[in-house]
Image (tube, rainbow, N blue to C red; front, top):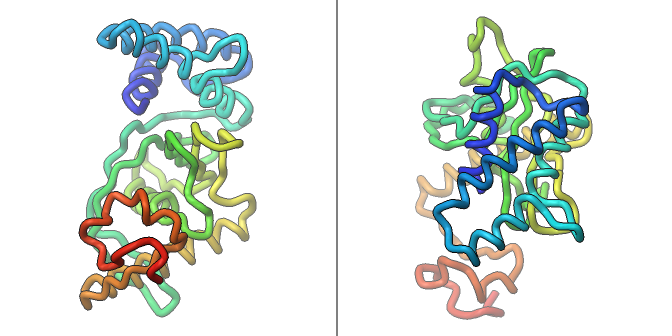
Length: 234
């Protein structure tokens, strides 16, 4: 999925297009369909048919591509640059409420859209459901790293305008990290506090098994290394 959308936006920009608007929404769908067919050429007929329906849709339901394209077309601020699979690596500053901490981190953002008003839109693709906003850590921390990492890019600073999950599981395709400026500050502050607390706990060797939902233990990928012996032992 990531390869398909990266290939589409690379092709879209190579053809001289910028942001996707309602006027060129149809053209974007055509380009996306061409990219999908190229990407599916290596799959078997059966696999290709399943992925084609998922990406391009069917008479019964819209595909994933339409959800991604429509999200951008419905937003009024123009995209001036698009950073795909953008690496975030280095030393970044975080404030846990007691002061600034410098932490070395490494990650990769699925997509950063730089907008004409000096803000950027951070997007994370999820094949399943997005994480619960109160527990989300990756997206807000990536947003803070991006603000610092983009300083001086194109000769200016950039601030976070939007952060969202585009989720292909669950009832909603576009799930924002926050809905207002106040919520933005709260989400970023809470994420920094959780990150610093986690880093400190790792340094102290504190790894207590504390599942937020005991039902997940039955399918957890880390069950062999967790000290929690069986589901229900909390």
